[in-house]
Image 1: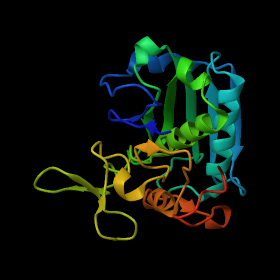
Image 2 (image 1 turned 60 degrees about the horizontal axis):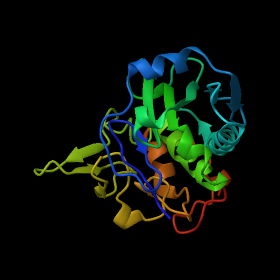
Image 3 (image 1 turned 90 degrees about the horizontal axis):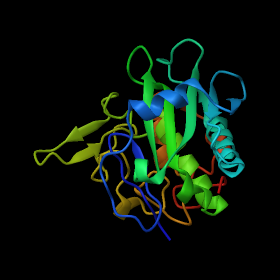
Image 4 (image 1 turned 180 degrees about the horizontal axis):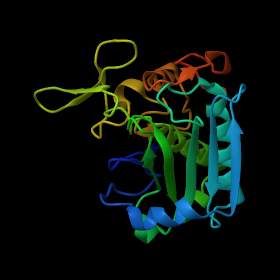
Length: 245
């Protein structure tokens, strides 16, 4: 069973059984999340050089909070150091909240609320999800969704263009040109994910499969944004399932 991912300038994640629609999100939905929350968690990497603060709206279920917390701990454990362009404090604020299905018309999306002074790395991101679909999903599916959206909150996909990591050919097809100068890498039509037909179950593709894994290609893309990755805390293998799943 696949989770269909579609992005509208942000990270727009779909679960099963819904057609792709356009038009979701907006500042009117973001403002309440940025100002309030019923629960929060502060997570630091091993040496305290990088941290995130997750704030959950009062409508978030304990299952969702638990999945996001677990996924956040997994990602932060991989960060040896933040990008040099990160503002003082080396922290990222992430708000997670609920949107009614009739308002969002999607399962979840991530939007950058604030960038660092250089405009290269998110310092505040908002993740919103359809409570009806997510709360009824299996726990591993919620975890998959959380990990995928948290990657976007760190800048995966959303900060590529700002950092000069994309190129477009004469047909305006978008390719990724990071990963240490490798040949152009095919992206999905939205330009914010790896091409599904080539990278399959990788967590950074538009389809999150039951055997989804966090592979080197996605970790390397975080390095292209300036994060120093501790591969000792990952499997370091694109071909096997991540230890976090």
